[in-house]
Amino acid sequence: MLPRHKIIYFDVDGTLVDYEADASHAFGKARDHAVQSYPRLAENLTVDIFRRARDATYIQYGDTGLPIPDWYRECMRTALESVSVFDFALAARMGELYGKFRSTTLKEFEDVIEVIPILADRFTLGLISNGTSNINGLSIEHFFSHSVFAREVGYEKPAAEIFMAAIEVAGCALHEALYVGDGQHTDILGAKNAGLEMVWINRERTHLLRGIPKPDHEIHDLRQLLAIIGL
Image (cartoon, rainbow, N blue to C red; front, side):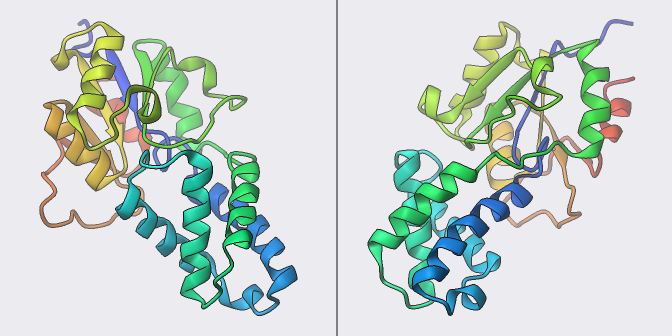
């Protein structure tokens, strides 16, 4: 029996790679610099504060509303101001350091290392991402022949246009594509906006938020995808 899907597209951060661990490492390097000027930040400027600042920056600018260096700077400025440090030059330097160390400790999830080669034997694989994580040099890099990044096409998830751009790149019909992602507002909502069959990889086993449509499939480990596609 021939597979129904021709291409499987994946989100990157949180789906294929442990973005949070890598981002926390990069933030730690930026904080180490800040502590030289403000020693109290060693305790006060926590990873949780950084994550809240990152969320606030996303709400204000989306993923593509600022050039990447400015996005990182604004995130650090927001984090600093939340602990009553108003130092724009420091925020800019922290943003530079954060960008320097991003993707330097990026790793695939264990299930990804196992499953992606299996899928690549039967399907074309691609990436759809709002972010900047770089999988170059990772063991899974060569399995992906298609990629669509928000900053390249001018649309970011959950806009249907980024998914339709991916369909065009793949040269297939909408029903021949499957999308796998972990985000609710970005991946589930975006894929459903585009009419794309969607697999939510819910690694943290969180509840579906109000207003988010139910995905076509929900898994907690990428190995469960094999059963969905009949492998």
